[in-house]
Length: 68
Image (cartoon, one colour):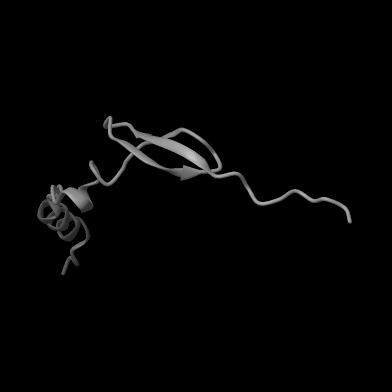
């Protein structure tokens, strides 16, 4: 019987975030870096930025208001 490529080899991997956090897991890829993780993402930290949308809405209504 012909031997085929088997299952991928999983090895320990260190995932490094741009904020400096390191997460240890297993991967076929090895060590790699990510831009954002659960330690610095606003959804997980609860530090969400509030955008000033009231000014934008007023500006839109002023610009596109019907002129009678």
